[in-house]
Length: 153
Figure 1 (cartoon, helix red, strand yellow):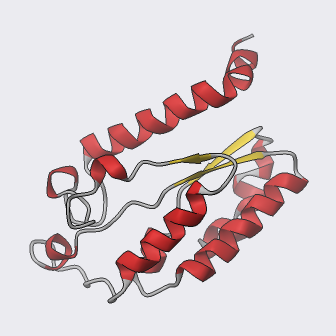
Figure 2 (cartoon, rainbow, N blue to C red):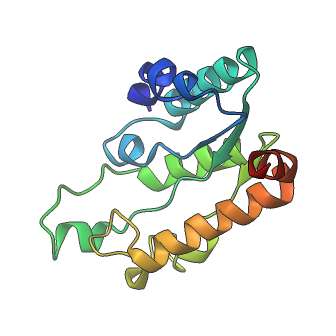
């Protein structure tokens, strides 16, 4: 998430958006980062949006599947406690004015990324990404149709 904040001017302001959809933090908590740090950075992005009259929309951070990461793909296993950090982060996200929950459909009964929705245990597969994209798209249409309609004129 630190890189997202660093790129804000070039990747966001340069395009003058009315709405910014932000989904991040998975790699941070997977590597031992804390929800507190991720939240601090996301709050800075939220503030940068406010100052620049951009509506921030936050998207929950997807879970991971450590067994698939380590087993089939030989990825480094996530640090212990990743799940708690993910839950803390997502709790903060869902308390924001504009927030989209995309995790419930792709989370299994253990709180991990569903094996049938990932290719490597870290990234959602095509169906998982389709679900995430459609869910965000529906949210934007429901909440920001005035911007969408204005762009069609």
